[in-house]
Image 1: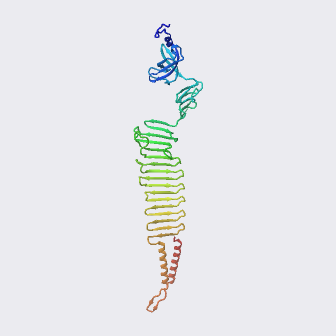
Image 2: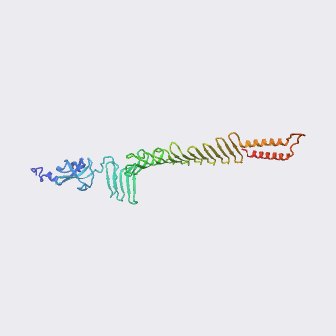
Image 3: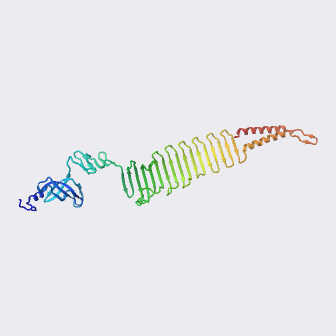
Length: 400
């Protein structure tokens, strides 16, 4: 056989390469053509230490139309090289049981009988367990677990995003804080949007919902016409305003029980209501009139023209710029004008009337026959004097 040509089929090396097999180490990979370069070893004769520049790798499920299930080999992988009529093919890739290199070395999934395992050097894996459970894992903090016993799907992740023409959802945890962010759009052009944020939605805010115009390609709401926020303390705020955010209606409720409501167009507030945790209540209208009730029930009304105060004991005071009326809970009152107090004037009139009645009782006049006697109706004057004194005494009891 020594005189046979190397290219004749009867040559020993041709017979070896016609149906022989050996091991091969991949030195180059050409994924587009499903080819690789191989250096053989462990074969006999010409099959040992042979460099094959183009070796077809075999996919167990591949069709001419392009659908396939295959694994692209890595440089340095070892496989079985089989020669079929002189054409080399490589079947599968394996590693020695005690030799593993790469990111997942020492962290591989061992599995049990009947498990199906697909894994990469980065640690990504798909495991179909014999009990029906499916595990899809990118890394320890990003995986899905399918549990057939209770039809349960568990997703474990740090960040999650879904984008559609009608909106987007994402959950981020890049800096240790969590944030759920969802946007709903009227159209892909995002002329208007509703945005929901939960988690660390800006400082102390744990939840925010906003509605307003939006710009194409720009996340979030440009100028909220509706905004509802909840702070980590429980404080809740609601604002409904015209485009641009000036004025409108706003309300705030604190965890202590305080409530604030206001309406109007900036910079003016047309109406406001404030309630403290203890119940003190203040209503303001256009900064022109105020109505307050304190926690004990005292009432105050104010405007630019005057005021009315009602104490919890029943005292009433009414004032304007020129006068004042005051009545106590005991029924005493005072009425002051611009220049005098009404009851003081009345008392002065009664005092003067007493003097007049006293003078009338001793009144004498000169006549043609001499000085007259005192009036004959002294009893009437005396009775009038008594009535005036009674009125004056009663007046003293009601004067405040």
